[in-house]
Amino acid sequence: MELSVDELAERIVSVLSTHPRREYDRPGLRRAAVLVPLVVADGRVHVLLTKRTETVEHHKGQVSLPGGSTDAGDADAVATALRETEEELGIPPHRVRVLGTLDDVPTFVSGFVVTPIVGIIPHPLELRISADEIAEVLIVPLETFADPTKVRVEERDRDGERVQLLFYQHETHEIWGATARILRNFLDSVFGPRA
Image 1 (cartoon, rainbow, N blue to C red):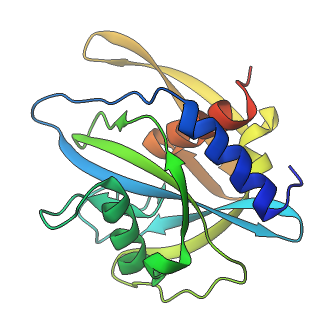
Image 2 (tube, one colour):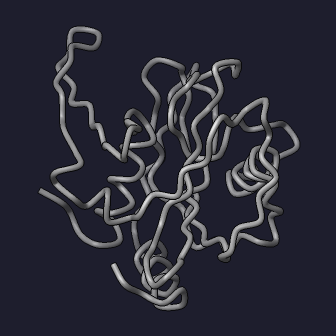
């Protein structure tokens, strides 16, 4: 996916601004937001992901997008995603070019409804990582998530219903759960559905 930063931004804004966004609102679920942080380096699009520490409250040790729970002082999901990204990675909000919002994604175990915000972060990255929250930062080529050899689907029972779980493999890391669903939704929305 060789695109300039401006070409990528135009495509994403065009698609997301006309996409009828699905909102998920069910009582008892907590609101959260994440940033889908895109980085263009060497003519390739990458996604910045984090591996969470074993000491955080939710999703211990999992690969995730930067983000977290909505605070009372957050104006909207964009504010939540940008605040959390700054707390976790030290990227100030003014360094993120916000491009749009994806469909809400519920988490099945931890009880959140996550609103994903897509943004571009300039390269080279200037990070100040929160060691309490982040064990590792991953810069994953976006094409990894479009490669059929890097994905598998498993069926599981959840509350008497068969559900499909998506897993991506990047080097030694497994990317699954809400993060995998958000990335698949992003690719399908912007570049067309995958098989």
